[in-house]
Every structure is written in structure tokens, then in C-alpha cells.
Amino acid sequence: MTPRNGPWITALRAFARDRGAISASAGLMLIVFACLAAPLYAHRIAHTDPFDSDVAATFTMHGHDVAVMQPDDNPLHLGLSPVGPTWRAAYLLGADSQGRDVAARLLYGGRNSLLISAAATVLCVIMATIVGIVSGFFGGIVDATLSRLMDIMWAVPVYLFAISLSIVTISQGLRLGPITIESNNLLLPIGIIALVYVPYAARPIRGQVLSLRNSEFVLAATGLGAGRARILLRDILPNVSGTIIVLAPLLMALAMLAESALSFLSIGVQAPAASWGTIIQDGTGLIYTRPMVAFAPGLAIVLTVLALNIIGDGLRDALDVRDTSRRRA
Image (cartoon, rainbow, N blue to C red; front, side, top):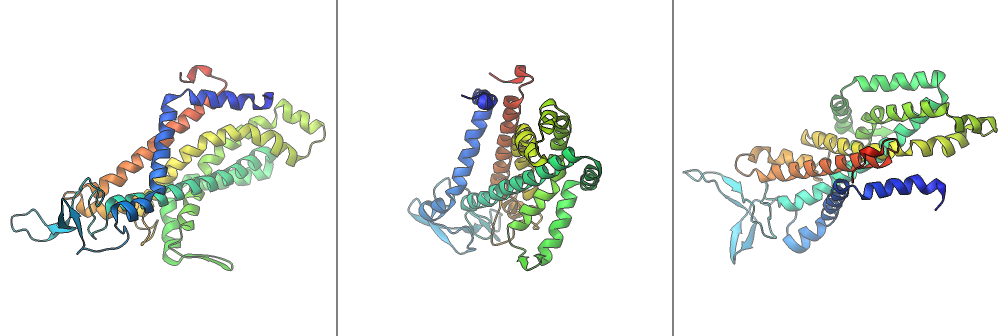
């Protein structure tokens, strides 16, 4: 073991001793694997199409054909309501107002929610790292310009900023020179969510770079004639990587909440695709008769965000070498 790898091995062992973080990681992986298995569940187990609206569909339960849409439980039995949870393979969590399998849509929607939040986090971290390092290391007019730009973005409430950008892009798509991104492309919510959270990640990175810029090892590298590029890549970036790692799961949790809010408002993921936010929106009209339609994706969001926050807390404690008393047994 080399001294260079020592702190990371120590942090990894500290994280492995954190039972809460390990349990949250296992739960998050279970959610991810379940969503990845959405086609297997829908087509091989439930034998339903989560994107096909069919109010006249039937399925077999206890040897009898059961209609997906059934008469309401009012005295006159007027109107139709989707079948409730069967707790069996087909329509495990019931159906929505269009006769679609809620459980299958939940898994397919989770794929999009997880994909958008993870991709937005990666893009946000990349942009925030570049802005934070460049701003903190070069200082002067570069720092002043980037800091003022971040302040302007910070001054706008994050959801208002995201909603404004989404309304503009969803209505007509996005044209970048010869490249056109259609309104139903998942790249739009990914880019919007990543952009609005850049100031929240760039500020702590910039603050750490400001403290590292005048540290002894950076001054020594400068005195030995090392170029700025080498100092940034070999000395600054490795020392802010801990902050970036801690920020990543927290940003992913924020990105998932933002994606759900945008999709709930119909300015995020567009039909026929689904996400947890769109499924909640589908269930608002059934909240009193079939609450599972909205409750299931809401619970999935809560569990995923909770797991990400616990993981981020565990990473913070494991990487905080200055205060070992905060590490959990």
C-alpha cells in the first residue's frame, strides 16, 4: 500500500463500518436493479403493457376474468374506477385511469427518474468543478466574473429557474446551431436540472480551492516551475475530490426532487415516457378512490432521496479526516 492510497483506503473502511450508509446503499441498489428489471416484470411476469391505454382490458384472477375498469362503489354504481391492488403478478398495485398497470409503470418511470437525476448530477458536478476550480485558482477578473454569474443564478429560486427554462424548451425544443433537441428528449430535463444546481456545487469547491491556492505544496510546485495545468490536475483536483464525492449523492437527491416536480407539472418527462413525477400527476384524480397510484411513486421518491442523503452523510463522515469522532462505529 502506498502512502498516496492510504487516506482513501481509510475512508473506504470508515464508510464500510457505517451501518446506516451501507444499508442505504443496499436499498438504493435494490431500487436501481428493480427498475432495470422493468421489461422483465412487465412482459414476463405481469404480461401487461405499461404504455398501452386499454380501459376494456381484462385479466385472470382466481380463475375468473376480471375487468380492469370496474363500476364505482356508489349506490347507483355509476362511472368506472380502475381496479385496486391485487397483490398478484398482474396489476400488483392496481391500474390507473387509463387501465395501465401501476407497478409496471412505476418501474419504467423509475428508470427515467434515476437516469435523469444521475446524468444531471454528473453534468452538474463537471460544470461546477470547472467553474469552482477556475474561479478559485485564477482569482482576479476571472473569479469576479464567474462569482457574479453564480450570484445571479443563486438569486433566482431554483424551482422557478427550472420551471422557466422548462416552459421555454418544452414548447419549442432547443436548437443549438445545426443540432435540434426535441421537446420530448430526456436531454432537456437533464441539462436544465444540471444547470440550475451548478451554483450550489461550485461555491464549496471554489472556497476549498481558495484555501488550497496558498498552501505550501502548491507554492512549492509553483516555485519548482510547474505549469498551471499540472498544478490544477495533480495538486488541486485530487484535494477537492473528497468534496465532489460528498456533493454527488446530495445533488442527485435534489435533482430527483426537481425532476419529479417538473414532470408533475407536465414540463419534464413527456408522454409516452413516464417518470415518478408523471405517475403522481396521473394519480391526483384518483387520490380518494385509488390512492396507490400516487402513493407508490411518492414512496419510491422518498425512499430513494432518503437513501441518497444517508449515503452522502456517510461519505462526509468517512472523508472528514479532521474529526474522527464524527465517524460512526
